[in-house]
Image (cartoon, rainbow, N blue to C red):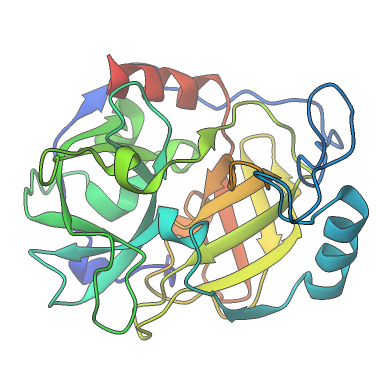
Length: 290
C-alpha cells in the first residue's frame, strides 16, 4: 500500500511500546460537537474584540467563516494558534521535514502528538535524532528546536502496525530551562468526541516551507477511523492535528485526530484519515504522561 502523507524513507523508528492495544472505541455515528467554543461556560455573550481576552468572534461568525472556507486549502498564517503545530525533522531544522506534530496539554508541559508511522517503523528499531520545530516557516524556527526524548506508541502498532492505533505521543526536551507548552501553549486532547466534527486541519507538506490549513467536517470511515476531504495534503502532512472546539479566549482547541491510520493517512492528497481517538488513545496518553 502506498501512503502519500509522509515520506517512508525518512520515517525512522523511535522506541516505546505500551499497553492499551485494540480497536478504538467510539461514540455513535452521527454524533457531533459544537463548531467552536464561542461563549463562556455561563452562556453569556462572547467578549467584544476590544475587551480583555476578546477577539470579536461569536458563534455566528465562526459558522459563516467555516461555511465559506470548508473544503479549501490555503497557506496557514503565522499566528499563535498555528504556532502550536510544527514540522518534524531529522537532526535539526536545516534538513528535510517529513512529518507534522503539535503540542498537547500535559502536566509536564512537554508533550506532542503525531502519527505513530512518523516515529516508529515496526521491525527497524530505535532512533533518537528527531526534532520538533513549532511554527517553522521559510527556514526559520521562531519557537525553537525541540529534540524528541521519549516516544510512546501502542504495542499493537509496535508489533504489526495496527492502523487503528497510528498515534504517538512524544516528550520533548526542555530548552533554555523551559518546556514547550510554557513557551507556546497547547491544545487539549479530545477523546470519544464522535465522528461528525467540524475541524481545522493544519500541516506541513514536505515540499513546502510553510504550513497549509483547511476546515471541513469529518465523517466516519469506520468505527475506528475518521475521514476528511481537504485537498493538497501530500507527503509531510502525516501527524497533522485535527482540531475542533476552538476557544477564542485562550486561542486553543481540542485535538481529535492526526493524519494517519487507514492507508497511513491516505493514498491520495485530497482525502485524509485518522485513527479514532477513543479509550486506547486515552490509555496511550496516560502512559506517556505517567
